Length: 272
Image (cartoon, rainbow, N blue to C red; front, side):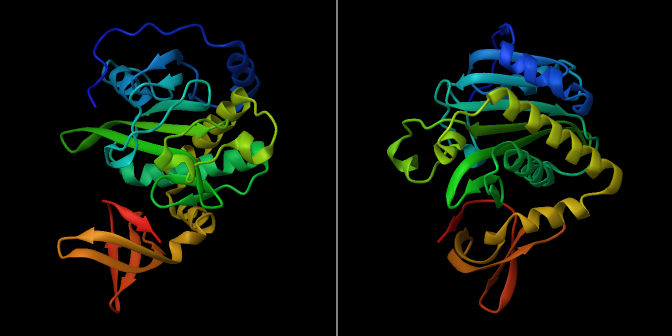
């Protein structure tokens, strides 16, 4: 997908988002202090990346009602119907560590805990970047880094939460769900946004202050599918199949296959 090049003028932040952020302000740190709201953009990650390249501070947040070219991992399209979801990206300036892959897991823990608190639903994480209820996806995460001379200049952490039922494409209809669809009642998007930013701020501060060991332990507790699930993936030798055996300290998925444990750090994994 092409980057956002034309100047974009943000709209006024809707009153419901303003009210929720104001109530959570003491707990947000720098997150959401500078919030750019758009009715429609190509991709919130692209807008946040451009802002970061122009010097935007950590915590700068981009929110949109819809994305016309949202994307997920491996360049997949992220279906972003108007008014049905919360589509947001946050600028981080982490220095050299951890890697964007690990920020994805850190964000997964923060967002899962946030959605569990605001909804009461049993939201779980699924390697590497999905949040699920049952076997259906309710949120996706995309962390993209920009590096210079061996140091990460910034990371854009994007997430999309399905708030309301929507007419998803046929190939997604049986694999997606929403908070309102699960609850059977309306969900306040401002509370979801404020809770998400608060949880992300907490987890990112924890990662910087104490490392990510405890966060990865929490990720493991929220990811029952990471142990004992049958998966298949493409390797240089063709399609492989194995059984998940957790993650390592670098966030790689461990899979037992043919009597050996293999590390999967990228590419397509199909859960069977």
